[in-house]
Length: 471
Image (cartoon, rainbow, N blue to C red; front, top):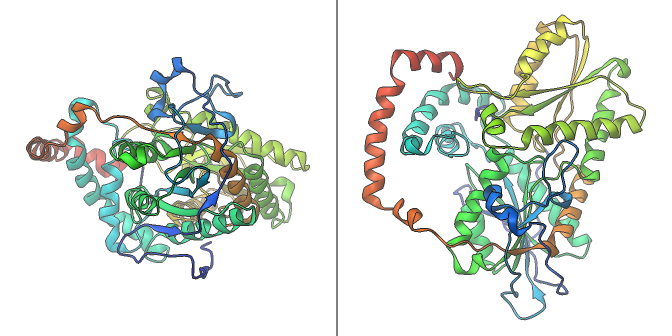
């Protein structure tokens, strides 16, 4: 996953005096509110006892399958198995938090290389065999150094940094206001996986604020090991090591691409952009989703491909109900490295469409809800230029959902629906995990890992691979 390809910017919203925001030094962004009293409700978990051993990242799933064979909980809400616990405060009173999870992105050009390191050091991004996991950080260092110059060019082209943090803060503020309008006062926090404010910082603020019930809302419509899965894995690790957090009832909205509000919001944006063409009915609707390595799907069981295909089917079904029957296609962007990713590839499909005589095309970034480098630079610049060179004459692009009111309202409804499903996620730390944190063991791994990575990746064969596929 390319961070130059992994990170309509909205106007800055002035927050009220009750909303606090951190400086660029890196502490977590959050939007505060008063405590909430809610009646005690039955805690529901949709996992069966026999399924627990197979749960990916500890997420529970019910047995019902959707049309493409994926196992899902109702409305995409997943909870942790276990017993519901009493509030940390006095009986009947809750202080509710909502944690928005996102990728994060470098805010300046100087941030690019360390951001890339954080990205590629994630074992859910570069999945090494257990025997070679000691190479994770040396490999991440090498890739980040090699990739940084090209990535900086991309960020420079969109203003010198990613707008993702700013937009996510705006979404958090709008979500907070919408929930309050529905009589649910909450604290809304933002946690980024690879840059400030990190998820760990947001969680510490949640603990400091004495939140007693938490809804986790990843800003990824579809689930993938590399996005929601990675972020949830970090949360699990933090929560199980802390006595207070491990007892906190948590509900994770695992995926939400099937929600009616999301589908209608996407259809609204698409239909509006189609009207900008002289002949709307002749426009090819081109869905471009972020790709993942094929091994994630075939070997690790990532449901991302199935969910993405169903998502496109549902969006087109909504458009057809409005009398919009345009042809459409789906492709995957942002591949990086000498491995096979989900196909078809966006760049190759654009060339093929031009060769087939398609003259009008509307690009739809379907896996992104915020503008960032993959929409502003990769789609708006690289793919647009490629499309025009390939014979496509009329190009358009649907903006990301951002703070679209109907979208924010639907997220608020998802939070309200997920709240009574919260249960504690308490998993004891294992002995092997303690051993892995031994300083001497860690130093030995880094030393030999760095040496092996140097020898391996500066061999002529690997240099050629990186030159062709990564740089």
